[in-house]
Image (cartoon, rainbow, N blue to C red):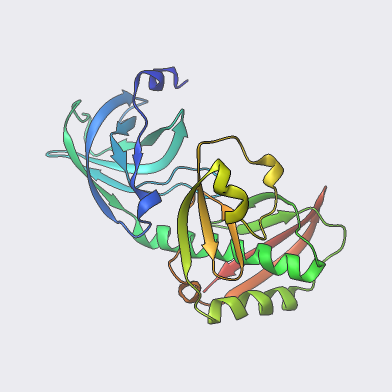
Length: 249
């Protein structure tokens, strides 16, 4: 379906360097019509995090000189971020047109808080079970954030909440660092699922001081105190383990 992206250069992902960036000027590289006013838009750079790594897609608007494009979903193929949505008129951006991206910040900031909280929940699970616990899947965003873990017994929800909220209240720094393959082993700690980590020249590590440091391409808050109050909504059995539903206030 997206064979045409093979001709395009990789998108510069501004959100990897600054999760708090809400506006960005970019250039249109490609527009492919879908149906009616709907289309796929590719820019040379973007602030829209695509659906990946358990993180839901960002949303927002892209404004041109005479048109507005509503970004309803972003996805990534072969290093290219594709924005899917609809134009305000029955027309499209021109190739090379300068546009301005405007992020739905309320949605993004909630996702940032939920994603960082998910990393802390991994830490809390390791404390409860006395070992690193394999994660099977995750959704770090609305409408229902959860993490799936490969364990046979149900953890105590109140203890998980207490452990996570202790880290939140300490207002610890959350840092983003980049390391080479040779530096990776020394950079990581309390990081599950490393056997699934793909080969790469450079790795992006999200490090929460004294908690964990793990490979992640998602958007995060700068300090744990920004998360607010962490809540375990419910815990349920799934085929290979448990699912912990959580939220932040």
